[in-house]
Amino acid sequence: MPFSRPSLQQIIDRIEADFTTRVENAASFLRRSVYKIFARAYGGAVYTLYGYLNFIKDQLFITSADAEYLEQHGLEYGIIRKSAVKATGGARVTGTNGYIVPEGTELQFIDDQVYLLDEAVVIAGGYADIVVTAKVAGTAGNQNPAATLTFVSPLVGINTSVTVDSLGILGGLDQETDDELRERILTRKRQPPHGGADFDYSSWALEVSGVTRVWTFPLYQGVGTIGVAFVRDNDLSTILPNSTQRQEVYDYIVEHTDTLTGLTVGCPVTAQPGLFIIDLSLESIDFSLAISPNDVNAQTNARAALTNLLIDKGGPGETLYLSDIIRYVSAASGIIAVRLVSPLVDKAVATNRVPVLGTVSFGAY
Image 1 (cartoon, rainbow, N blue to C red):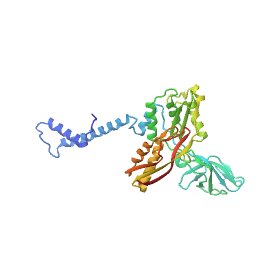
Image 2 (cartoon, one colour):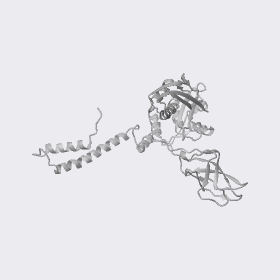
Image 3 (cartoon, one colour):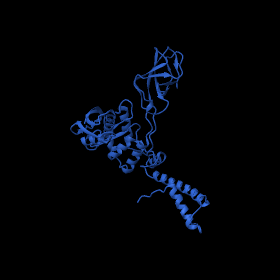
Image 4 (cartoon, helix red, strand yellow):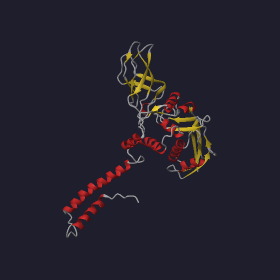
């Protein structure tokens, strides 16, 4: 049976009872008896020890460990928390020919995100194209194309406003969360490396910064081949990786240094010719629901439930079952009843497509 931690008062009462049984003629203690003082002092110390033991118990297990101890669990498997990454991108500065914008010049967005100029540039033809990097790492540093930055300290001969180029400022990533790190460690513990099993490819891909979900397809192009598909849910513009990001994952799977042993690891040499990183495209899935009550709050929660469904159950080569759709929406807060109007059949997704939430329409149940 599980151990029940006694309360502070229970511990004090037990100590007082021990004093009573061990002190001659101590049928009862006066309210201000020194023994009661001892009982409270000892009780407080013992209660603190119980709390520390309870804390240590939680740190022994990956599922309950706090951040610091969770990282220690990860180190035993060579798994390190993914660090935050700074966003970087291009922009155009305008001004008077011949004027210089020095390296390290600070620019900022309206939300106070600050960017540093990577290299000094000279205005020619009325403008200069620059590359900037966010001062602080994280997704907050990502900016859409055509966003306007301004110089923190105005420069002579240089216009104050700077326009982000058509590619935007991208690549900023937040530090891996405790839950994300915990899931990777648990996966490593539950599925030890097998020298090239399909889940080895998933684990390797997830070690690359920005990768959030991975799917593998053994026998993708026949015997001796495997397909790997992944998305980057935290990217600003799209969850789909570009060619550079796909190549990064390919190179990492083929060969990388194990942080625990320092050895070079990766897929077997004979498997490299059969490794394919799948170029995904989005598949928008529309839903029509009859819900009760059919109000704004219920609709918002239903959309959130459908989004979670697509993250948990929707992926390349997977099937969205009608029963799962009903189950997720029914469990959403504030929804009493739900009827699925469309789709009316299970939705199978191709291996080169990833489902995303499309239009969601609602009616009264």
